[in-house]
Image (cartoon, rainbow, N blue to C red; front, top):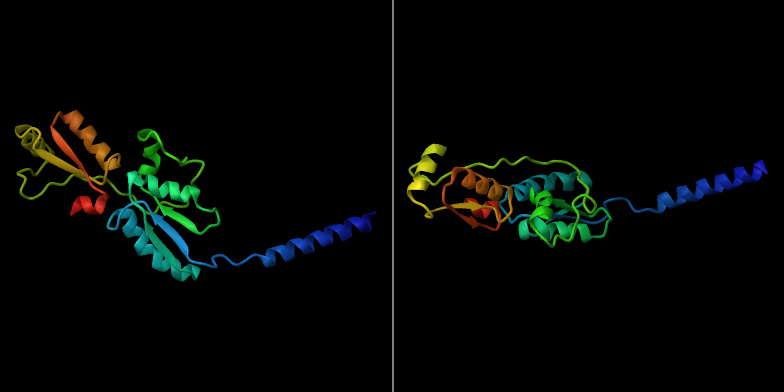
Length: 191
């Protein structure tokens, strides 16, 4: 009886080893990196900076696929619905965590459908004005805006982005009358 158990265990070990050796090496095809912002935004810039190094290290091309829109929901849903074979990654922005609270129809669960690998960058929100605006401090900007109610606009990378929400909070607390102009990403908002 002991000999039968040893033979069965040995055969199982051999079958496991054969199955492992039959698996293809990873990666055996290009890897798709879905970027949730248009070209020029921070996540896109980081993706384009690291993809050559990843290509070199992995021996396969990293294909950048910009899928901007709906504060990243398009890209995040595409990633959540992709075949879980290790060939689809996503460079995310703050929207991945914010969107379930802002949108009624988010068709992915950021906790259940996506797995974080690493933090690539940290992007602070900054407040800048065009040189033609006579304001060199926040106090001067508020005075300028209050003297021109409804005439000063602020740009953001899009509706619901962290920059948009931060500026709305600033607008509410300061009681300044700014008008929000959402762009299709951080790059376009700065140009």
